[in-house]
Image (cartoon, rainbow over all chains, first blue to last red; front, side, top):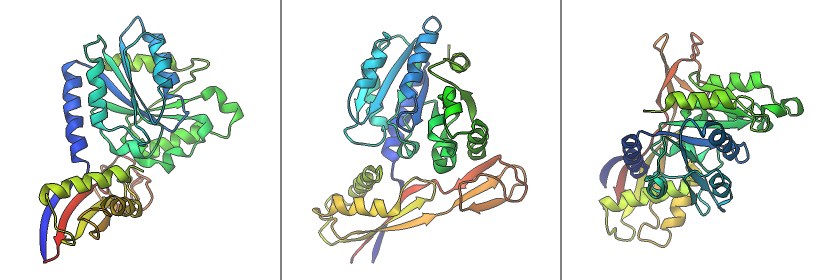
Length: 216
Length: 114
């Protein structure tokens, strides 16, 4: 019986393109975040608030990933920032090649911060490097406080955690303390922000952190 | 369902070694799947069979070897295999740990019929 030794990463093609993306982002001195969460936790709202709060401080561009529709891109384009929509046609995550093509459409614009809003899914996007500086995982209080334990790979791979919809805590079965404890047990180095895009609590601190990460 | 795109990448890597495989020539493909790679072995097998059923790779089996998650404590220096994804050292309780194994997703080898 003959055997061919292969020893190669299944996702090596994605990883190679992600590395090219990373170099392209570095060349432009961008701070790039890959926003990951379950559907409806507030990724797009957070981007909207961030753009509104920081419009006099730095320039933002957005790559929107969705399975269908350009509804999110339409929301963000109203703020006058460069935005490009990726429609994955059913695929559950963004891949580096899609991000490369999308970035090509906006790279000529003037911006320092790039948001890549991934498809709403706490499983699949964890395995795909897009070339970002870091992953930001968002979890909303309406999802309960056990999500970090259920989706450990995502919380382990993220650098920052945003607990969103904190204005709803009195009405939902979610303890902020337990949620933080669970998240930090998976990843003690997570930088945690507590936000509400309705009351705007915590948004200023989050925006200040982004500003501190900008490479000028 | 990102197992589908993983299965497509596996086929692509196979074709780099065997550009035109003869029907019934590939016996199996050994795949290393770490328990923290976010890949379900059954789902990967299902997707691989689905996309190869009308090709010369039909009948080739995915032989999936699951590897455990192993963590290394940065405080006491010991290594442990963990079942649940609770990243705390079972000896000293420290949570500053490094994952040393269990995130891999590799095509290891291709076995051919003689």
